[in-house]
Length: 121
Image (cartoon, rainbow, N blue to C red; front, top):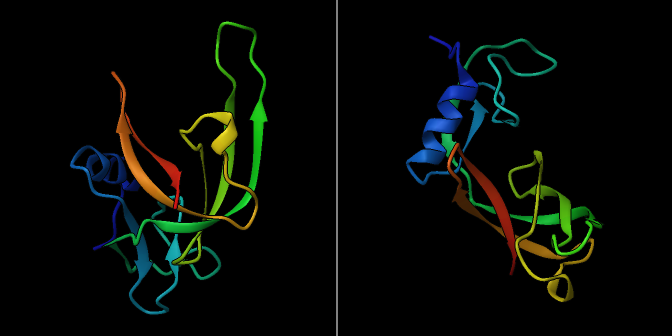
């Protein structure tokens, strides 16, 4: 039976402190963001597996804020499993990684949800 609420399942895993990805049992292809079927094939054999949590910075940009709010950043990370994920890196501006640098995922929480951020390796 395939998942009908993959976003809710993904959020529940993060709340448990687990970074999980979906993988097609047939093709072995990893999928992100969570879906009910594998893109391109429509196959509904997606299973949840633990992510390695490591990847390579594909793109990064710093977004300037008005003082006293600190600048933020947006990063695209190519996970070692294949999918690309959008997130941020939680370090000061001097330590921001560059394109091609390796990063490691970490789960953080705020009052409303849990999400994945990355730290330079």
